[in-house]
Length: 434
Image (cartoon, rainbow, N blue to C red; front, side):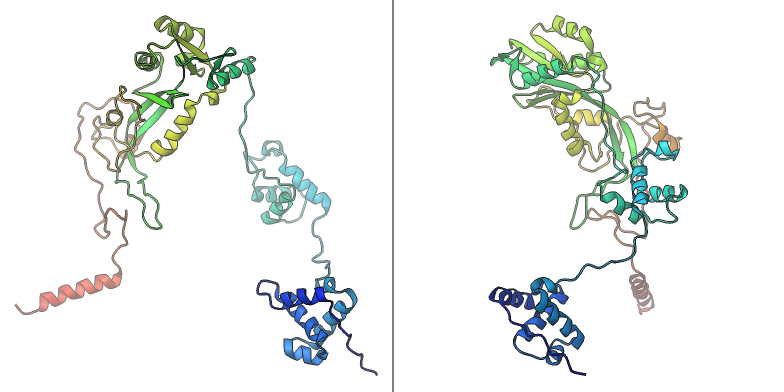
């Protein structure tokens, strides 16, 4: 039987440069590098047996890639399409899985608020759509259409029939215009609102600063020291904040904030002061507008549309306070927290800030000495102190086997070999002659 002759390889200049770069590549796939080297050796006139020895592959591998390049060129060195594993799920089954993911769990009578891949896998098997399926397969099906039923977004209907008119009025004031007339230099725009239920939490252990590869550590246990309401007025065009801390919200606390703003310059002598507020209970409706006009004729109250308090720019300031001041809450009691704030007569009143990490003794106790720990946290923040108040502050019991310092909340317990070494040293000291 005659032996088949090797295919002759002649490289064009373009293929020669590409094969040379591929043969010396450190990032290409190993199979592609070997194929490029086989073709280059064939172009240099080496036999198949010599090429197999040089590249350390079987001679049949050399024949295959030498022949493919001779027939197809560079595209012949790529892998051909393969059938792969047989399809286990039909397109109808995949469509039914996606249709189920697009339904609410309540429609399927499932006791869930939203679907997850393991939940969908169980439901698909329970309905008999497939005999068995894994959550990863469910996720792969959903990813083809970017379906994520485990995520949700909140939304709300615009209920105010005059939404466009009211929103335009507020946005025009931000642009220093009212009813088509530009505002003068003696006219100001102030956004006001209340931030309620700022809890003063006295941590049982000091808050520790961050360190190398370690975040700031805040103790989870705390004593409740009351709650505050922070009322703020934000001058939109002067970036000026005036704030007050009160025990609660309502008409009287909000009126105090109005008095604090309108009795100081430049607002007291201003031609007009536009006060943008939402529809909260302390400043809602025409009654609040008339009440403000009686006290301060130069003040004009502007309400945002219903369910559109996000148009009030003081909410941006409250968001910054929540993220950078209030969270995580490590504060003294509400009384101490109120006194820690700058007085209202300062240029810019800062919000109630956290302490330096220490947990001072509450000025007004919120539990009686005979109460247990459960009752201690179940009391409301504003509950009155007990008759036998001012219990002594008892520090948290410390584990004698552990070491506490300012750099680490809990340093490792002494290792067993350290304990043995310490015991051995103590024994030697005890047995040494006097």
